[in-house]
Image 1: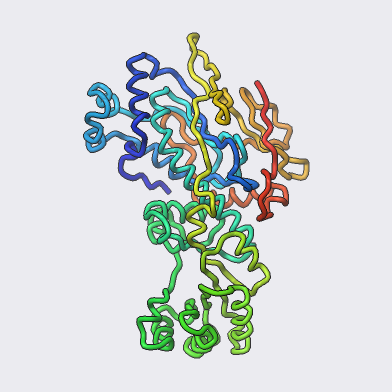
Image 2 (image 1 turned 180 degrees about the vertical axis):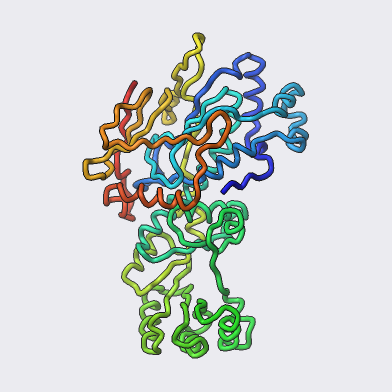
Length: 432
């Protein structure tokens, strides 16, 4: 699904334009260049990361046009001849990258962007913005769904972040295995399934819980989920079954010791004959809280704040660096930043996931030049996304979800551990 929006051209930094202006004056703006978007490391304690935002990034590339409004906003920022150049800007280069939903590791070349320097450098900020946010959410969501096992997770974080970030977060969480979102914009734009019933305010609106439950059941049916912790949980569960009958879909718990309360509620529901009624828990859950509830009789999790803030890691630390540029003879020359603690590795990269004969990932292999001949155990990771300015690599969210499942399935078992640790596979660098 393509969601091309209004111009994305101003979703960038001032210095992107001044760099291009200076390069044009110096005669270097049209040099062929290769940029790479990559992480130097994983967020502290994380054993893997998840790529998300690819589809949104492709939409942004398509929408990166300096329309009349954008050009008017740049009056006084750059010179008139630069404004004329921007008016005709179209990215006409090539982009390769990791497929959406793929796992990544330190120095994984998540995007390789080739074009003129001027074309490619203008995309730096918007690509970093999308990838850093969406991959942070997907990485947290992936750990949560691993901890949840077969129990579904619902994204409920819209009110805990910026309104547009909420839509992107719902999409990223769905890529990483969440089953639904509370966010209706994510449903409309991306087709993410939505879910929701009622909040505490609905119960408080009515004279008593019986009236509130009856109104909800009459409108949404007995398969609805009733929130039972506004007043007294035990009494609310009794009333819920009395109103909806033993076919009540679910009850939701949003406070207290969720594990202990869930055990009591499960026992009460069973005694009342509502053996099929599910228990949904919410309340500032993260992957560790979800893992702690593994033995509790919980059927689904609603996750909000911790998800949309990346569960402690709201960004991935991705960078976008020039790794090769056209030399005097027309060939590409490797270039690299050598700053302390911020070094990059020059050269156009390939990336392989090296696997054992049994199919378990053993290493992230990053090399320069042509990749080695495939021996059957190395899975190529870079796929074409844009060719000659045209998007060729758009996939559906369902395909991204499938890629995520397959990518995690081939990683070592340590990937399921919620404790802090090192990357589950090493990154191996190979020369030309």
